[in-house]
Image 1 (cartoon, one colour):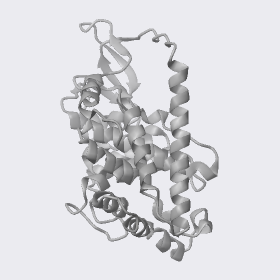
Image 2: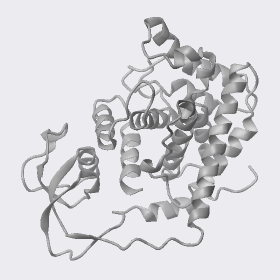
Image 3: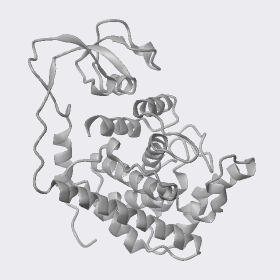
Amino acid sequence: MSKSLDVRKRQDKIGASHGPGRLTPLNADTREKQKILALRLRIGMTIYSLDRPCVFSSMFDGPGMMIRTQNELYKLQSCGAVYAEIAPFEEKEPEPKDDDYQARLETAAKLQREAESTVQESMALARAGKAINVDRVMKLVNEIIVSLAKKPVGLKHLAKVQEADRFAFAHCVNIAKMVLSMGIMRRFSDERLMDLGTAAVMHDIGHARIPEDVLTKLNLTQEDHDLLQRHPEYGADVLNLTPGIPEAVIEAVLDHHERLDGMGYPAKKKGPPLGEFARILAVADVYESMTHPRYYHEQKPHEETLSHLMIFAEAGHFDLRSVQQVIQLATYY
């Protein structure tokens, strides 16, 4: 890479930025019950009731339950809304937009377009049986990392595209932004961030070896399902034929649809054999897929998706730490 990523400085900024966001207590000694979105809960708040049956209702032990642990907080944050006793809050005045605000928006949009173009080119090369341009992919990953210098991506700000032919490309770029944010939060080294980002950009490259009519088909046959479930293997094959792709990237692409309980594919691996990259990718992939419209399903509400992920993490299907980080990204950014 031509420029240093200076990850440690960024990580320190990110760690310092965690907090309740734009809400500021008026008076810590004045308490009142308010109905708030569960995503706005914090440790130390007291829960009085849930506004609807919740998958985690069993952990609610009645009025006056105080949130004491991070795990309790994560579970409750994946519900809808709650009645809680909290310090009254007021909204801060929005910060004035500086002169560079529009320029930053334009830069972000340009990066999104360039990133989608890189994924599209890689897919086309793989479909033609040619080597992927590794340098271009890694340059893209580096640019995404640099763009996350101040703080991780806010999940509600991921690109939402309407054009069907852009879905696959935007999906890979959104996944890269998510997992790189998670990697920075975990204080990954520059090298590990590059590998994780490359795996994210390339995680669906195996689709290039599947007929396009199958990829866009609404009513799949069992044969179609079986073929689609081989795309991680096809992706690993493509990357194995591409000089300069690290083994960690190939392994993550191969395993990103495996699950901790052995219910994934293509090899039904389970538990410890699944690497950290694959665990992160699995959660990010499901979140992004559920919350964005696709030709085969409507997008799911944000809170419903988080609840789904937490339920399956508690059941041993997804990596709990990765789900908790997705909730962090959803809550603080």
